[in-house]
Image (tube, rainbow, N blue to C red; front, side, top):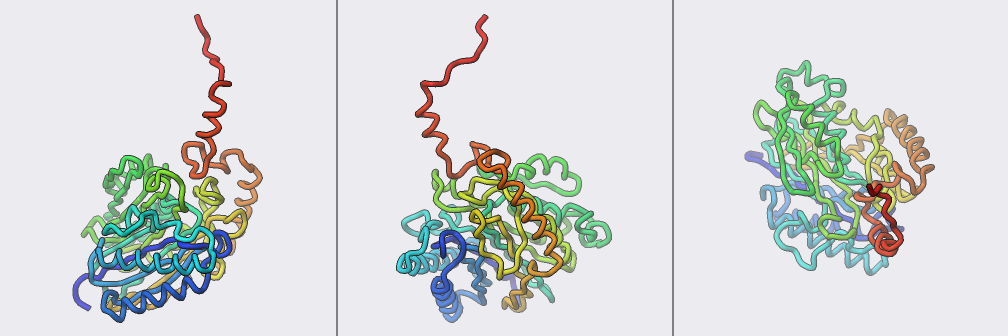
Length: 370
């Protein structure tokens, strides 16, 4: 296939089965039907309908380019159709990630998580798509830094001539809606000042410095900023290309051998471990969690999605799962106290404004008066 292809991953929670734990098979069947129809009509080259927890993921290859109105409209209408099935079956939070009454040209800012990448397909094109549930977009900051900037994780940064110059990180400020580019490795320390605060600063894209080749893309939607009140979870997605001058598959997966602490979990208001799981273990139930991630491996050939292969279901991640469960016990024991519960200014479900208003007259000054 000549010319560039676009890989779009758009994910949304349109109804949970039961609660926030899974997606009912009928919703998945509806999404599959819509995707197959779009492929037959020529809108898509290929697709892969996947899920994690209570989210449906539409993984699509096409020639429409990034931010295509047709692709985004299709995804929106597919989620709307799935929402109708969810309502029929009385699923929990039906349509909760569809935050607008009508499609307005792009799903970004409307609720669904979206990551896209446009590139010239290589002779062999291995791509890993990560889907996370019960966490926020900043959850990718730690692993994406390890993949593309840490030689202790990615030895290719040291010994692969095609990677030795490093990578460019595009970082977004989710609150002030600004972005900045960091050249790594020379600006690593500056970048860490920001991406070490993942509730606000998020790595959106990574490019190979030598030729600006796209290497990774993430979703950066944050629903409580979009809706001004909490409606759904932020459950993000990430696309990572690998091999041939990019991190090897094993280097892309290695960061998930450590279940780092992320925000999300129950009611989107707690810290917990990001547990790597197989696609058979993607249904969070303990305290609606703990947060989890699946890795779907594809070989893209002439736009076709050959796969997926379950990359994080391997036995070599069993210890990471055990560590995550121990971390879950540690955090849960804190109950409503920080660091398990998020700081008040980051909580997505919170009674704080109402409580403060109710008790305002009972606060007395403790200032020392000369």
